[in-house]
Amino acid sequence: MFAPSVYASRRARLRQLVSSGLILFPGNPEASMNYPANTYHYRQDSNFLYYFGLDHPDLAGVIDLDNGKDIIFGNDVDIDDIIWMGPQPSMNERAAKVGVDHTEPLSQLEPYIREALAKGRKVHIVKPYRYLVLVWLESLLGVHHSQVKDFISEELILGIVAMRSIKEEIEIRELEKAIGVAYIMHTTAMRMARPGTVEQEIAGAIEGIALSHGGPVSFPVILSVDGQTLHNHYHGNILTEGRMMVVDAGCETPLHYASDITRTVPVGGKFNPRQKDIYQIVLDANMAAIQATRPGIYNKKVHLLAAKTIVNGLKDIDLMKGDTDEAVAAGAHALFFPHGLGHMLGLDVHDMEGLGEKFVGYNDTIERSNQFGLAFLRMARKHEPGFVVTIEPGIYFIPALIDMWRKEGKNEAFINYDKVGTYKDFGGIRIEDDILVTPEGCRVLGKPIPKTITDIENLMSK
Image 1 (cartoon, rainbow, N blue to C red):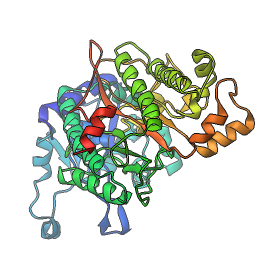
Image 2: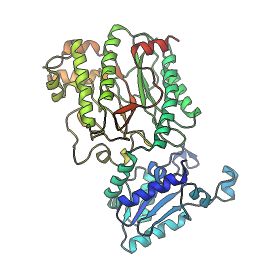
Image 3: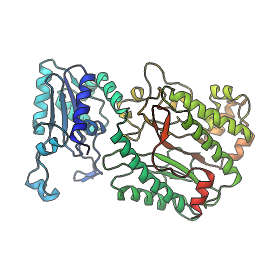
Image 4: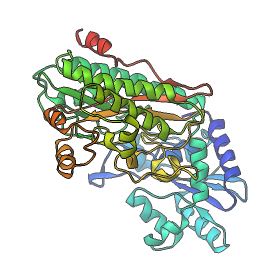
């Protein structure tokens, strides 16, 4: 974990952003796989980690805004725990590591919360995303689970988003560690992308790399030669010459900061002419978006720049036609690029989206579009120094979507459906980097992972 002063400083700042009452951060409990004692790999709640830092189950943190007190509720271990887990630090020792002076047994949390409510004090929570936490809150607050939503505090959510959106230098170093591991994962996948290899061999190898460096993958590995399916977790295909393999994967550091990188490579290590054409268009969109990212620019504008780059490239190879600006305004590009350009990155791979996308990627200066494709843009607001975002344009040939649009005659003024139909066996290409917004512009975080045609072919030839 970070130094105790880091967590104390964060809690002190949050006090300035929330008016009065109590802030309650329930930590995550264990989650069982198939019977109570057999649990999934433990993952602490990210907001609890940010403000209280302890990576253990059965804890809760309270920031008492009125009395200037921070409290961690949790139990010391007993002999039964020691038999299975070995000696453990006391709660007081654990709390001291995150700058907290006051601890209480977990059994005292409910009476503490109930007493505050009885006195008419406000209890601030964020929306729970795990059923067990919802049930716990139901008990703590003394209400039916359908009423827990009444305690969700927009004031608290906005305060958390304001803080967690701007990454501290210590956080940036953690993110770069995660990208360093992702470098090994992705270059390993590139070298393994040979005809006859089963996808699961590669997926398993790169997940093992993440685990061997101290953390799990930051999301289930997306790896497939059927890259036209955006989140393809099926790993049963056998790689064959002429296909492209999309790998969207990252890891968490031991402190749970995430990486999220995508690379697409030709099976066997050599791009054929058709693959080169499409790949270069996506790479051009990736680079144009990175070059445009800077403080003060709306990420929606950067997304639309990537869309226009894709349209121009597809016009050059006769898959699209007409005026580029008109095509993008009509959403014609979304046949090939149906998702948003990227999202925030940090303690969550889609950082803070558990608090609500509308608070993280949107605000009172910009609203979500309802246009197909653009509606999936997770992050549209203006960039600020300290933001860490992904930039991940792509081109996909989705047979069902192509057939549906063609049948409807949708955007016929901009799409050459006859030629597009010859690409329905192509798959998809996505290229993704993790970007830090700086006062002067932005920089790509971490060790550069090969992404030009020449660099990929050179690495795969080795």
